[in-house]
Each structure stands twice: as C-alpha cells, then as structure tokens.
Image (cartoon, rainbow, N blue to C red):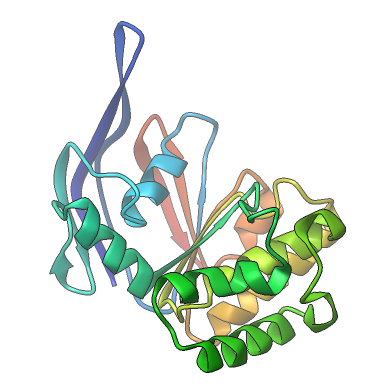
Length: 224
C-alpha cells in the first residue's frame, strides 16, 4: 500500500536547517499494524504527516496504492486524503459546538454524502465505538476517552483503507488508553491498515511490526 523511496524532509528553524527525515525508504502492506517509535525529534510525526499527505518531501518518491502521490497539488492531495486516509490525533481536534454525531458526520457533509446515508453511517459508527447514548452530547460533556472514540469514529466515517494515529493515547490515563488501543486493533483486524506513532513502549509492542526512528532515519524494523 505504501512505498517510500529515499524520502527526505528539512525545515528552517531560525537560522538553522533541521533535517527531519534523511532518505527514508519503507514499504507497508495493506492490512498491517505498524508502530513508529523514537525520541522526540526523531522524525516520527514528520513521517506520518508525509504518509498522510499533510506535507510533501523535499526529495524522494511516495507511492500510495501504486500511484505516485509525491507531487500532488493541495486539491488533489485533499481528494486522496478524503478517499483513502483517516487521522486520529493526540488532542482530538473536535469541533466544540458540534455534538458527537455532528463531529462524526462532518467529513460526510463535506463529501456531499446524502443525509439519509449520513445518518445511517453516523449511527453505526457511534455504535461501533460504544457511544450511541452520547450521540447528542457536546465535546465539553464527554470524557477524554469518549472524545478519542468520537475522533476515531470521525476518522472512519469515509471508510478509509489507511488509519494514521499520532500519539492517540497521549492525553489519556493508562486504562482508557488501553481501551482506545483495543478499538484501533479491532479496526485493524477488520482490514484497516493502521500506523501508530507513540512514545509508549507498551503500545508500540502491541503492533505486529515495530519501526524505530532516530535522527530522521529508520534504525530498526522488526516484525513478530
């Protein structure tokens, strides 16, 4: 599903040029559960952003499902993201004035999905994450674990083949984090390709494939 060849990315920080990724080459097959670990500044989130087409590399080639997506313009990249990729972030990024159901429905509204189908899909997704009874609650009325469940349901609203999670349990206590990870693992068992960036060794070890990064490079790639 994912093929990276010689991917490099640098950023200007003050008067210094920081190399976030250094000629990273990586292939990830459909259906894999991969964790990406490493210290702060190792390039984990930059890698995830590039895979999610939220950023572009300075050099190298990125193929998604066999198509070269390296140089897509913003409109084309947004279309691919909407069709193929779901995102789960540490800080949830829910719209405060929308209910749980409204937040889950938002990508469907933007994609022009018909109201009847929207309602059916939102109802099913909230049931899948155990929040049917919280559908009309605002984010301010939900716990951290519930907020992340809403975010996961929203990420899955367009039936993406690829789910990218950046520190998805970073703002949760350990017990709630395990529940959220179990939900992500269930999505993976149903066929969704899952890539999780995490600092948590326990979470990283749950993945069937574990990639370690350091100084912008992949330094280990282990499978179980």
